[in-house]
Image 1 (cartoon, rainbow, N blue to C red):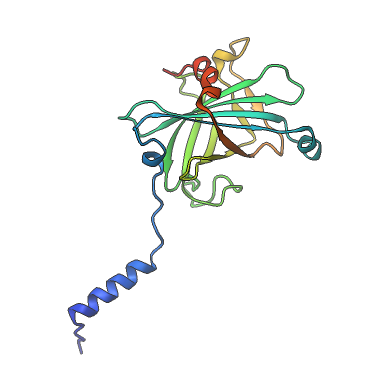
Image 2: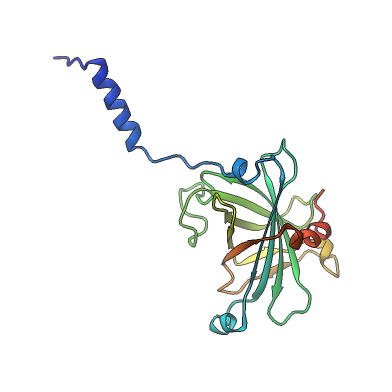
Length: 202
């Protein structure tokens, strides 16, 4: 016995099914870069009180620049300058990134970064030089739609940018147990000018 559902009923049924589906994550790049290119600059400075509570944290200051270089490019470049506890000279990291709905999901369906609770975000691969084919470590970050903060997630080690290393050798920085998640606040673009000039990826 077949049951005929009126057209109006089908429409209501379709709408109810659609409404029950999870909302698709929206790519924030067009909103973050309304001119299709540009940069966002973020910084975090940790004070002595914070560092005393977390002796395993090596990073005392982190500066990050997210740059969309060309209107035709879908990706962005992440540059980071890390000041480390007990070191006079900071170290630099550069990573090519793209936004992905499944940035934090591996091929087996498991989370790549357990500290990151969402699936979508900017997934990055650090590099030693612009021409290098050797991967220098994964990075994951998220920027809210208002662009006022950057939530950064790192692995236990990350490759450093060769050109700003004094000896020009490929090195990997082993991070402390408390160097995995950082929240940076938006600052003036001029604060990232030196980082962009010195970490040349063009």
